Image 1 (cartoon, rainbow, N blue to C red):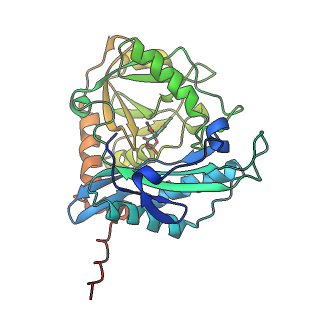
Image 2 (image 1 turned 30 degrees about the vertical axis):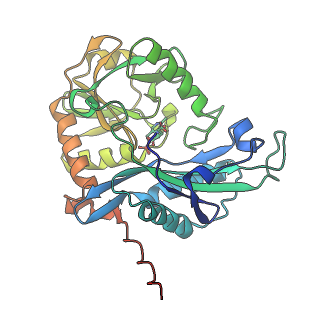
Image 3 (image 1 turned 135 degrees about the vertical axis):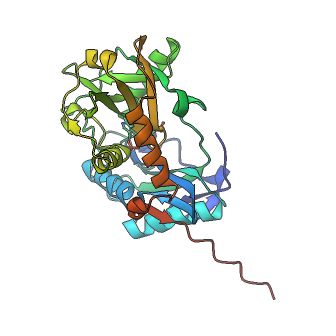
Length: 312
Ligand code: PPE
């Protein structure tokens, strides 16, 4: 990974190499952490963080789901994100806030463990490969099913649940594909290992609903809004596996993956990237780059760091 210099950890900026936790931290053993992925973009007018407040709200909901008190209020975490970007002199970057059950207790009852919070940021280019956004990716349905919501709530973004995505990702990577798509326990399409999914059928955008065991993606919500704005009909409904093979277009969305066309599913070619995907990609990338006043409220501009006091 591309290292930066400083990480915000439990209230202060520390050197990248010093942002450590104890090997007996609860979160490491049992996956008891919650996290976010946020992007900032080199926008007209400075470095712009995309939907920061929505990401921090989701972090709070994820923590609440696991009875984890976040020791820092939203305003402080918001300031931490700004501080990390400014201190590292970053423009476009990926931001990873994480809260984990820390060191102090073992065993499955976690409520006595302290909660550690960190915010890191670094440069992270195209998640699914340099060419992916232009030419699309090859995806395969994994044999592993998405964890059902009666097992682990899909709407909370918690560390442990990613073991499910990791198995799916390794399996499809070994088979030579760029991304794994997962079906839910009922056999309908849920999402990608780290993205939500959309198909286009006869000009209508279709995406699995929250009940399909998906993460409530912020990029997904943005695309739904942009599509509605473009006059494109959007339906949230169950999607059958075979619909992917005959769809006019398929694309995936996520903070890391952005808006990425899928050009093949299970070796069925799909005409990618199609006109609807292109239109929504254009709207999305204009919005994140501060080139569309209609989406201005989605951006938080990073204030330049305060100048160092002059030494006497
Ligand atoms: N589904 C899953 C399973 C998922 O992990 C993500 C984000 C999404 C949907 C899209 O959500 P949103 O980012 O709010 O639009 N995946 C994050 C982690 C990626 C990683 O490799 O780490 C991300 O994109 O930041």
